[in-house]
Length: 429
Image (tube, rainbow, N blue to C red):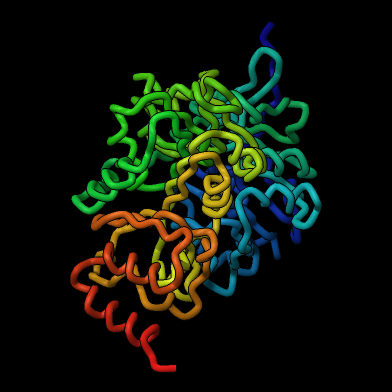
């Protein structure tokens, strides 16, 4: 039986939004660009509409000067598309663990008036899928007063927590558009390659993997072809896992939860990835409050969590979200998995970063930049990896940590770091 549905234009659908509303925008590859643009087109008649989202992808401008009285962007994780507006008077950032964002919606701390989402077409039972991004979108659609959905035949139908019945959707807009694509493998250089090799050397057979965003995690995966019985429980993944799943390297056989299935909360990659997860029961996309729950993470064996950093000081404090006071990204799920991996039997929490920036500035520093945020505290940090080596800071005192970090810093900066070490630790008392 084929069901028929009433579709309307994006312009008509977003008339539901009123001045003063809080509007959720579906994130990552699921960013509903046509709905966002239709909402922005109403800027002359709207005032003080608050937009909330995590990472957004696609060609959409959130920092149009004409929109400043109409929209305020209250970001839960900053990305390239929102970085400029978040660091202006017309936006801001909420520091929060990714696992806890659904609580903001469900506990009415940030009640959602309208949720703008992108979904797959309804199946024969009337269910659409939130597709590539379940993460915080599940809580948003469950609690929003109104849900406006862009129905896109190019959105994969994913298994897990993402199904939403058409009866829960206030307005439906049929709009086919290619999903935004990201190819992390195109950004590999010699430094990234060496870091990937170093991180891969820490991963044991039977480990459960969590991988952050970017070229380093992608390069780590390229070094795992000889591994056996790996599992995947991660907040996101990209194309790099496809070959490992198809070749049986990632088979999820050793996991204690979701045995035989790869678990994630969102996806970002190329069309190859979106086609791979379409109606694939071996991949489960689930609510971020489950995926990133430390009590869930720790139950799997040898959880090996690989995350990145902007800078790390000589005591082990990790800044991963800001350049001084400039908000660059967000806390995200780093601490969820760093702590979860530490509590897992045989787990390894790993921070991987190049030893210096493209401009030759050391990422291992005597002190974090003024105003920088500490994402992973020195009490939570364990393994640090650069292209120059691997150190484990767990159980080390401040002097031992500093010496260890200097040993994997860029050679051009070791003399200055040694001087900072002696200035800090070798004073006569």
